[in-house]
Image (cartoon, rainbow, N blue to C red; front, side, top):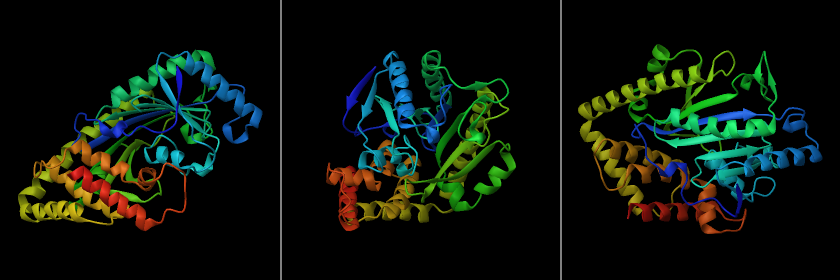
Amino acid sequence: MIIPSDEPRVDSWFSGSGPDEDVVVSSRVRLSRNIDGYPFPASLTPEESAEVRRKVERAVEASPTVFRAPRLGGGATLERRVFVERNLLSSPPAAFPDSSVYISSDEGLALVLNEQDHVRIVSFQSGNRLEAAYEAADRLDGELEDQLGYAVSLRWGYLSSEIANSGTAMRVSAMLHLPALTELGELAEVVEANFPPEVGLKRFPDADGRSRAAMFLLSNRVTLGLSERSLIDRLEDCLVMLVHYERKARERLLGERSEEVNRAVKAAFARLSGVKELSDEELFELLSLIRFGVASGLSSRISLKDVTKLFFIGQRSHVIRLISEADTSDIDEEEVNKRRAELVRETLD
């Protein structure tokens, strides 16, 4: 079922809690699918694009899951940029001006139309829940497959506009906060010694492509030649390993430099409590310290869930949306930084 919706929810997948949430922020599974008999989105005529949309809408209407259909408009509109910041749409949004998205009520499931592929099923879970994310995506995929008729090859599996995405056409990923391994300079060594070649770890960028402090994305490098179950198992093994090494690194850091860490966490709270203007870059750096402090039991002033939420709602487009419901480009950066600082102070208070 599809119901109209004018705007994103205040809360999203990043507002929940889950296993190993001190290290694992979220688990995500994305399935890419194309409808047989149609060119890939980049080669669709306007008429074909409309046909694809109607086919998907009919299939979604028959699904027992209730989806909202936000009105995104064309190009890089404010609402579209907000969904990019939530990792529900691809970046940059201007590259896919005709894409659209259907989102479940809790924003844990999303159907993205006409980006690189006709349909991308995106499933989010808070914390270390790769299996649950996969099960939700797979269930929706099964509901749609019979009605849509996917483009599949016996040799290459599910066909995708990106060759590297064929086969299972599944991307499994987890967002991790690894401040201790980063601070101690041990992360590269841990990855090199323990990761299989089909799994990679990279800095997690924001919607503008800049890296967030100590945030990383663990994901599979390949989709061809491995089953979906094998990919999930490999990612879960790497997650368990990273959680273990990060917690051990935190113990050492707190044991060897406890006074320094305590001062840094208190200074971060003091800065955010009194700041009048705040750039997103400074926000991410300070939140990384505070998240580490809260997860390590150094402070109970704010919940881990609310710290994580600030990483996302403190981004530029989210803040602009707080300032004005209109999609405007004449809001200067000083005003954005002031409103961001106010948002953080309100949350801490």
